[in-house]
Image (cartoon, rainbow, N blue to C red; front, side, top):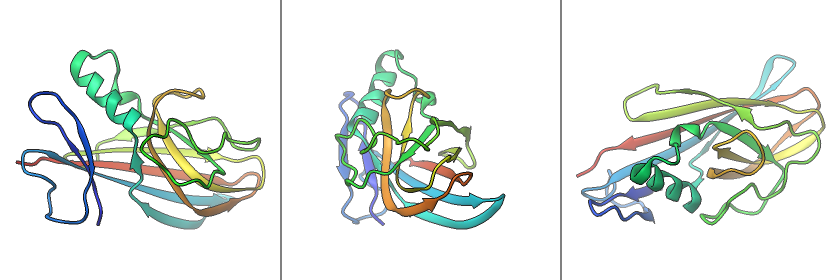
Length: 181
C-alpha cells in the first residue's frame, strides 16, 4: 500500500514525500499519514453500491495550511469538513487548489460533514450530497469552507458513479496518523 508521508522535523520544515512501498511506519522520526475515501451510492433510501477508493492525494495547499496552523494559528485544520464532487476526469495532482471541473448544475452545494475520531490517531468526516440531475460523478474533494473557493485538503478521481436526480452519495473520508521515530 502506497502512503503519503508528511515529515515534520524539529526545525519546522515540511517535506511531502510519496512512499514507494518500503518499510512500514514511514521514516524514522516522522509521522505517517494514510488517507482513505469510501463512497456509498444511495437511491430511494437503499444502497446501490459501496466503493472503497483507497487513498486520495493531499495537496500542497493543504499541507501549507496545516503548517501555518502549527506556526501561528491563523488557520484551523478542524475546518476541513466540507465534501464536494463533480464530473472532472483529470488526475489529481499535489498542486490542485480546486476540483478539476467546476460542479455543474445538478451537483449540490458542498456537504458539511460530521466529524469524529473513531480510533486513536484517526480523523473521520462523513458528508452526503444529493443530486438533482443525471450525472457521472468522477471526482471528490475535501475543503475548509462551504462556499466555492477555500483550501483543498485532499482530492480523488475515480471511475464514474452514475447518479440520477434524487440519488445521494455519502462520502466517508478517514485520515490516520501514525506516530514514528
